[in-house]
Length: 157
Image (cartoon, rainbow, N blue to C red; front, top):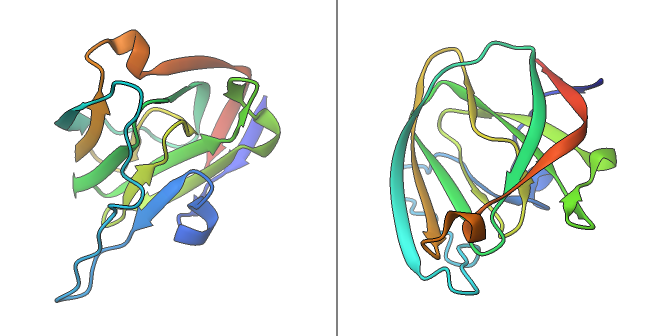
């Protein structure tokens, strides 16, 4: 089993997998138009709202997912903190040698780049609500891909 310690989420550290949008200062209006992307038939925008049950640290990760036809943006609506585990792609699978894990504040939104391997959403402390924006082909097998990790990863704070 591999152990990963959560790092604070920063735009610089997360850049290979996506964008981080910190809470804007009064009067600011950051936009993500450069990194919102959809290709290969993913033409239907989906704005979903979810409520995620909390997890305690440490917890084990055994799978990751990615969306090869769409970016995926998570906007916290009512969240304390949440966990992001990401990996680069090697031969259609998550690169286990370069896994990274982050803890995000509840005022930080993230946009996963098209094809970025990531762990399913996990929140800490209490339930968390998000708005999620992505595009779909309307065929779930075409819109998301799952991979079992070659070893279990223990995420610790």
